[in-house]
Image 1 (cartoon, rainbow, N blue to C red):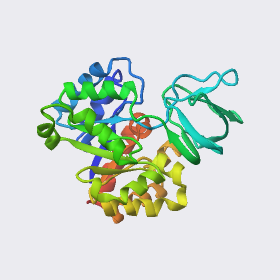
Image 2 (tube, helix red, strand yellow):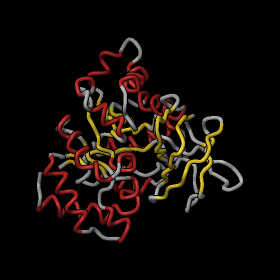
Image 3 (cartoon, rainbow, N blue to C red):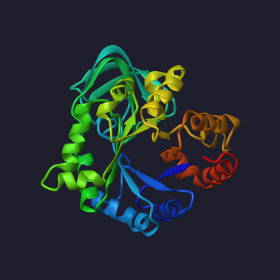
Image 4 (cartoon, rainbow, N blue to C red):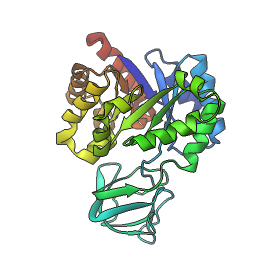
Length: 310
């Protein structure tokens, strides 16, 4: 089975090097939603120094339409400010990390949201949120940060990108335009590998139109997907994705026992085995598992694949 690790921020150089150099890690992914101490160009160059040395391909994970918090919220003295303008029918819910959620009470100027009760934990810059409500519309596709990382990646010769919340042909075409615009587009396109992260019901509906998705790779990004559609629908969603792309990647909500109890549980093992039985052969550790539990996670992975090889 192939393992993709999510590398930490570029200034955590020792941990980054440990992950990239590990023989069980086949590829690495950088989450551009994390705030870096360096510019996008410096960040990507710093990662490539090791990924090229150890021959581990790099995916640049673009956030695109994923809703994220633009700046630290000073609740209750101010609103939560989003990175995109939205429209949604109320009542609606806002889901934060840590399985915390609040009622969405008002949306002001598209980006300022007011919730009740207040979140249990601090609401920080870059944190992803999910809004569940009827007729949710997110304005625009890519942020300035996305375009900066696209340019940095292209300048450095990166040929692998991930697209968060892929859910429409227009969205995919906008990424293609950013990546392949210009006279060398056809030549560059042949070498690129693009991963479409499926994280919503709209994304699942898009998967059903599989002809327009080829030759791209699908990812079952299970964290946000489960929030969006609910746990009871997850198995059918996982089946749909792997049926439409036998090379699809299973990501997130792997080894939750490490985050919750500090050790791998029987449920964790059963989850991976089920995904393997469905046909998944490529797996990606989340930011949290990779950053906070890499040593335990990779040792478990070594033991698991010795018992259940691909």
